[in-house]
Length: 224
Image (tube, rainbow, N blue to C red; front, top):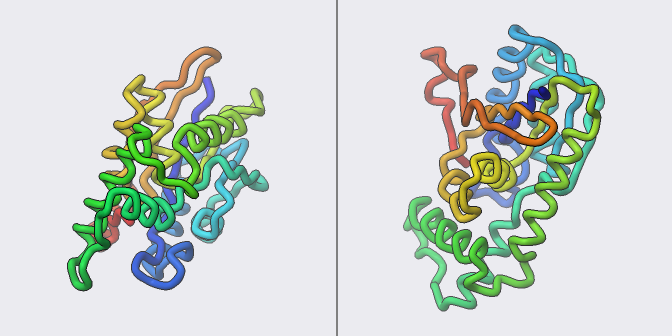
């Protein structure tokens, strides 16, 4: 069996002009996870990440925390959907206005949930965003890359909420639409564990953040 640890990137910079960089808290989250993983071992044989800045910065934080890792392999199939493009197209097709100024995060994520559900079920044409079927192909290819070295017994994957929640839904045999609610519950630097055999992939742990358990880190649990 191969053990895959799927890590969602640390907190990015939501609400700024560049979401794709980690926040100050995100850098701390990734270092804390690196410390936790380094203390527990065993070593990772393979590392596969998406190509986004927040993936690379999360990986760098793990190393800063003391985790020794082999050279990473980047795979674009582990990149996130483009939420801004998706929402803009969905609002245009459905006639939904953007949230009013000052309405806060709740309305933004309510609209994102609705847009994601329509995207996954192909109820609304959200072009120029890619259709969900192409996204799914990329995610499956990313998983295949993580598993490509059959001699690797422990593999670290750093990705985003969309790809990870899609892989969880597939491992559970759940409808693809369930990825939406899973996605919106994933915590930054949350760890999901897969055990992969020759013919099946099993999800044995989900969205864990043990590195944030100490009392002085409990305010460090974030979702975006």
